[in-house]
Image (cartoon, rainbow, N blue to C red; front, top):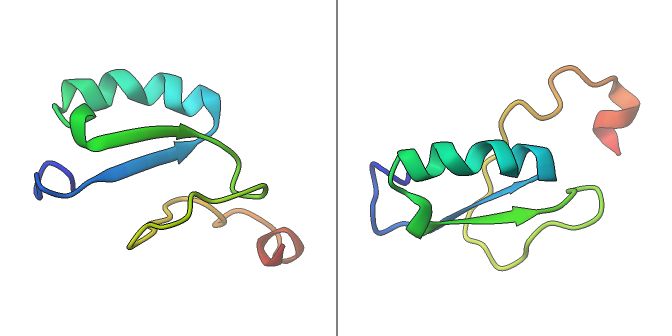
Length: 69
């Protein structure tokens, strides 16, 4: 999305291991300047003040109790 819409700003909000692995891919894609990398856990907090949140491959394999939480 950030490559298709260069004026857009985004974040990758993920666990430390995922951020570490994704940084080089984001650099290679040429979008590091418009993509903020934030380490965190969405069970503890979610960065506020954004216009949209896109979740992918998040709860598809969780049981109902964990997904509801």
